[in-house]
Image (cartoon, rainbow, N blue to C red; front, side):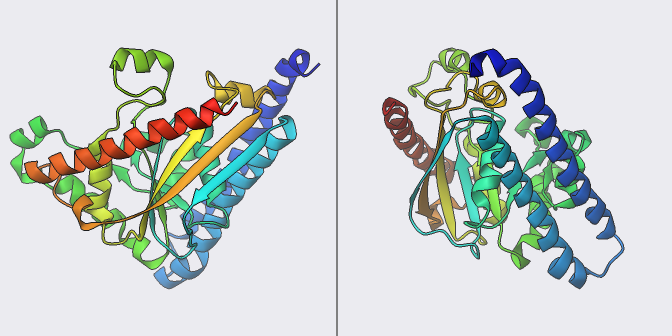
Amino acid sequence: MRVLLAPFIFVLHFILQISNLALWGALIIAFGLVKLIVPQKLERNILNPMMNCFLLWFGQVSVGLIRLFNNVRLEYRIDGHLDREGWYLLLANHLSYLDIILMIQFAHGRIPPPKFFLKKELIWMPFVGLGAWALDMPFMRRYSREFIARNPHLKGKDIETTRKSCEKFKYQPTTVINFVEGTRFTPEKQRLKNNQYRCLLPPKAGGIAFTLAAMGELFTNILDVSLAYPQNRKHPMFAMLGGQMRHIVVDVTVLPVTEDVIGDYFNDDIFRGGFQRWLNDLWVAKDKRLQQLLGNE
């Protein structure tokens, strides 16, 4: 019966999810505009916490809708201590746009509100772009080695710009989220990459190193998050919207931030090699963990 109703569930669920995004996004943007004219103390002590609550409630309502339309088991596995007063760098695999909703909802009551590092072009995405701007999420413009070679005066400018964007994070605990593969995993991409991993794409070290270089002294821990949709591996977002999602696993391991993961990745060859080994080892362990999670069904 549910399969027959899937198209109707999809349309209704999609409309409600978009409405939820529009509601909380509009509220965040409105208060973001208010921030432009109020004293910094009021912004820091009242408006920012309020807007972060709007973001977290967006995640709560969105996952509530997922539970309403799906007979789903949402399972959290947490290895280590989480603190709402800490600063975290969250590293996750990426399977679907659903991952973003889950990460926002996961933060509610467990860790500080999440911040995503965004490309500058995303500022124009409806509700999402201006909402991220209002929440002080950094919009980055990265420069290639070739561009820096032609414009040496911009060397280190990207790190410095991000560092300035993150100044406000010092005053309020924050979680920075990085989807390490740089794109969503699909079997087709996995085959094209011809890599050693069965459940992952190769990790992109530059983005994480970039974040650690800009904010490393703030982070209290790194969170290694493995997301799995064991019964809906191919198209989790469509399965969720159509009422077909059955099981979601959010597996979290709390890791320390050590001195050997903070350095000049782009100019120090020795550090770059060590950092890549650290990340590759982390990714091999994550791939094995995901195989276990998916093999339990």
